[in-house]
Length: 364
Ligand SMILES: [Zn+2]
Image 1 (tube, helix red, strand yellow):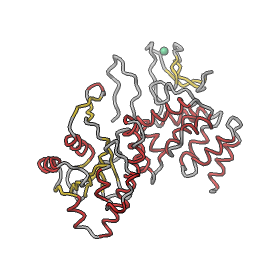
Image 2: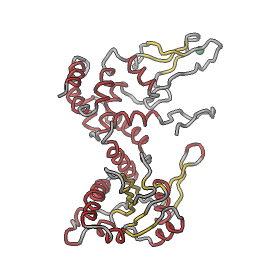
Image 3: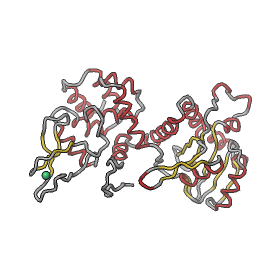
Image 4: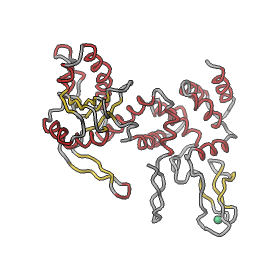
């Protein structure tokens, strides 16, 4: 264990308010998370609440400033020590008006200490079982689930990258249909293939690790509408596939459509849309690739996706898209610092409850 992390560990274990099991879990979870271990963990100790709030303010995790509702000429809200759970709140120097520190933030209505929420965010990055977390932290399962749901809403439907682009081959195929195409009948494990939910799979072949987008076929597609709401339009599979490609892929490059997508109209529509420089079949692509490339496509590009799609089949339909999006997010973040990325993502969401005031700007 490196010297720096030992220091953080020892410091943290001196904190008598945390249980032994929690310390063991945190040491394990933070092992490869340098930023959390070095910067965040010390701020989670009792007595360091002010440092934590300043850091949260700097990261826009709480409001950097608050206006006093009374709006008298000398009104000025400042963070003040107080006998509340968070130890501090906003208080007006002039009229004493008070506002909780969590107002209009991710942390509002989460019924556990801020310190624990950050530990749960770290645990989410590693897909830790929420029941185990609720046991270790002594929280109700609903509280941990509620935090997980909030995180997943931030991650949901937001790929980090658009796929493809000039000079790149974008692969498009459909689970489970394409499993038949990839594997010869003799080596196929029929029992492993479940078919309840069809999932459209996009893969950008230019990146290592491969970048993907997965979309559960719904028979509809969501569009943003006014007031930050979403409207759903019913559509056939061809139109739905087309919309997913238009939303998540960059124009240019070559689009290779796999045998799992039994939609000749999709190829025609894509060709006539001129979105890509060329639209070909996956068969065409593989017959012009050498054996190594074919093996790479199956083992490295599609196998992880097949396993993920299979794992998603047992979930309720309304949970599958979120499950897939979060799994892809974790894959894409593996090479960076997922905790820090997630904190940034959380800070970019708009948590203001809509009022008559039209000023609630949306930061994206
Ligand atoms: Zn005031």
